[in-house]
Image (tube, rainbow, N blue to C red; front, side, top):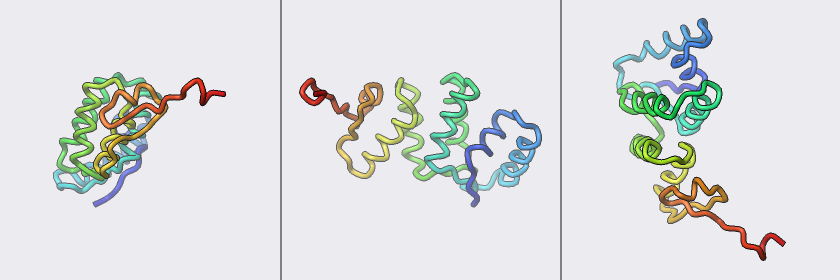
Length: 139
């Protein structure tokens, strides 16, 4: 098994740098058909979503397609395949950031009953709860 950094996946997916894209393709294709041969950790997964959305202006539907392809490919394995798949499902039906969804699911898997945040959008995710600043605490 090998691990890959975000930039390998980005070059492979976007082909924005011909030399690096070619090298990334060669590397990944060496493992084609080999089950669980390419490891993608949670940080790389989150960075991938952020880079595709931010730098490359991928729409959510395009990002979902990329994630579904990765999760369903036999070559790729994740820190927790089940949680990565659940995060994908939640991301598809939720307006929250993918990373926040992944955080909530990981924390819940570690038996956290709630994950607190000041992020209003994240607080709409299952297992998240907004920590609200009251008028008294602002003083």
